Image (cartoon, rainbow, N blue to C red; front, side, top):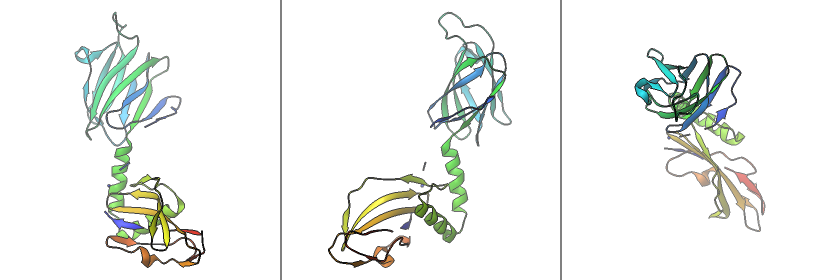
Length: 231
């Protein structure tokens, strides 16, 4: 059932010379910097706007250069740690142009110059929702319906699989199997079951209501006792 109506971290195993990290706003980004070379920190679909750290520009044993055109950061370990400081580590906060703030905690490793790419799923979702919203509604409905029937993820939509008890719907029992939540469309996958001793006919018209744009039936249109279908 599609109705007219907005959503979405983990660390991905790094390649040998590149770390791909995923984080949401306010989260801690953990990784490593080169102990002897330069470490580049970039933001997928975003850019660093400001940095907050101690020592007025030099943190415990490291320095940062902000490249303003692309918004990348370049980190270098520059001195031995002072008493009480953690050895060979970089710790700071960064705020991006899109308004996200991250706490960055990096340890040093004996590797050549390396790169760290930060990906925020919210940025990906925003871009996908903008692209989806520009498509004709009929195309978006068909695309969403196909994803719902296949049980697949779809750009621009968050998916919930709530646990709900069956409730009565006329001669049927009905429960929500999945909810696809987008900015202006919501899709619900319903499971209906014939709880009567006899056969019951099922038709899309039974589920049409104000605000519902499309209903499709997957399964038999006549349910025998105990049989189920998906809407």
